[in-house]
Amino acid sequence: TARPPAAQPVMIAARAFAAAVPRAVASALPSFAPSAAAAAASSVRSISMTPRSLSDDLSPLGHDHADQSNTEDHAFDFTDANYRVVERVLGKYPAMYKKSAIIPLLDLAQRQCGNFLPLAAMQKVARLLNVSDIEVYEVATFYTMFNRKRVGKFFIQLCGTTPCMVNGSEDIKAAIEEELGIHSGETTPDGMFTLLEVECLGACVNAPMIQVNDDFFECLTPETTRDLLRHCREKGSLPPLTKWGSKPLNGQDSCEGPLGKTSLATPPPVPKRRTLEAKVDPRTVKDTMMY
Image: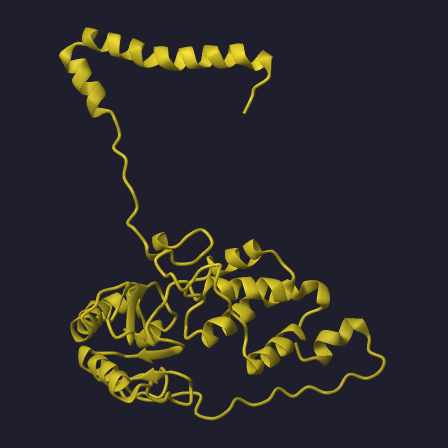
């Protein structure tokens, strides 16, 4: 790019200065005393890098470069049944706030694609909501619930945070690795299982635990973990959950202690509140509402 004539002398001077600095430093080094030179060398900080993460395999647009079936040239469209879901989701928001539907529509697309969110699906969501692609990309790349890299049919997220760790999550991890022959971030050759160690999943009371797809399996031991994996492989599905929406594998129904449910055995009483009269003194509202 051509530069204005007035800028050229400044650029020439800057280049000359940049070239002169290394020569000046090099000429000064021999005059250092040996101890001073050693001290100067020891004062240089080393550069360190954070460990490589799974997202390093992904482009800034949020798709896997190695997956040739996941490019901008590929198409995605919702099924007829899912288009009806799209309509219901969009019906929750005013027309000028359709952008609020980005997360539920990305989740819907990921479920349609078998727990995987391809680039084409992100772009389809952008078109439906009349927003730019980058507005969808920045959501999909922020939330770890969106799998921009293909995972197995059973996506195992192993909690390794403190409550699970002190209750044996390392033993659970070892049992999974031994049973499946994979490590964190890897998928079995048959595409059935993917293992990923994650941070707290919010079921600390029943630690150690794992999340498989949407479901929580808690109070694990290495033996019950192996049984769970073998059930998934043999049946091709997860075991049914309890009525509370999780599955403690030690016989519990939910998060009751070893003595069972010792409190709140019956539904709590409904607070008794009388209907406000048409004319109420504002100063007595708290008393009337039994606050």
